[in-house]
Amino acid sequence: MKKLKFDYVKIGPHKRPIIPVRLTYGSQSVNTPALIDSGADFNGFPLSIAKDIGLKLNMNKPIVFVSVGEKSQKLTGYLGVLDLLIYKKGNSFQFSTPIVFTNDLPPNGIPLLGEAGFFDHLSEVSFYYQRGKVILQEKI
Image (cartoon, rainbow, N blue to C red):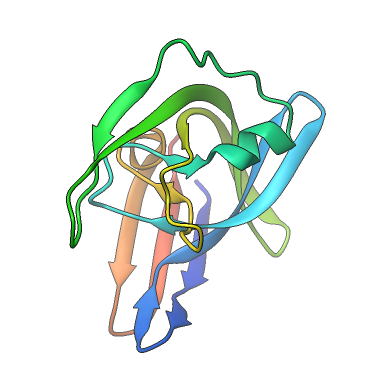
């Protein structure tokens, strides 16, 4: 059973559990940092990433969801299923997962890894805030 350990990333005065991931669709892939968000119901990535890797989304079937934060608002996204690779120094694990792609993330926003599509594909996600570490354990 593989475990990957990541350091939190400091952004301004805050530490965040941000990890590198690779999204793959067919022969196209893109690497991006993503925030592990235990409050997110599902994975959320910018719509531009889907376009960059040639993923065709059904724009006639929008998914409407509500954001949490300073201003709660309704957001619209489109569902795609692709491979997500989590990697660090030659070690990795990969799974096929649903992702909601949206234009409604802030321009400087980071993709989110949430409950459905990330947490449910791992046997354990451990946050060690004081030590600035997050450990992911692959499901067997």
